[in-house]
Amino acid sequence: MKFLTRDLYKKLCLTSIAIFDSRKEALDYKQKYGIDIKDEIYKNFENIIRFIPGLLDYVDNKGELYYDGAPSDEFCIAMMNFQYKLKFEWIRICREYNKHYNNIKSKLSNNVQKLAIKNIHDFKLTNVKKKNNEVALVLNGGCSYSKDNEKDNVNIIFGDIKNVNIPENYHNKRCIFSEIHLSNIGQFEYRILLDEGEIHIIADNVDML
Image (tube, rainbow, N blue to C red; front, side, top):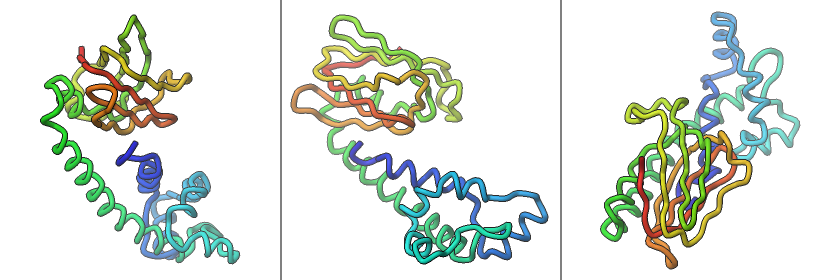
């Protein structure tokens, strides 16, 4: 992926962690609602210290992200700043990809353009069918919350394949992001970021059923 990368996905996953102005607010929230973010912090510890500025040095200097029933003030402040800045990073990257797509759109067939705007976020890849010079991705949208995903299943059929790279353990992997690019060896390249692994397909045509 060139724009919607795995690192970006990992950062966005950190936004599921509740933010607090201070340790005291976190303690008050826990006492009032019985909700504790301890497990979320430890589950995401590696990405927290990797992506949130200042916390790696804080931990290296024996600072604790969580102690005595609540996150530290340092964690609360850093997480709040991180999530605030991430909103603008997300907007910037989306604009960059949209600019890229608009620059190449006129060189893409109508079917490729339809594929480019198809929202497959949270679809599961349930099957891959290969026949002659075609590859079909069978996607199930049962776990998707997108309003425009009216069908439970979507078949994306790529024809005149020039190159294909699909993880062996693809079954039931979730689709996170997708991108369209031009290719030197085919009419277009389609990329899907899965929750584990990526799909790269270069082809001359595509159809959706």
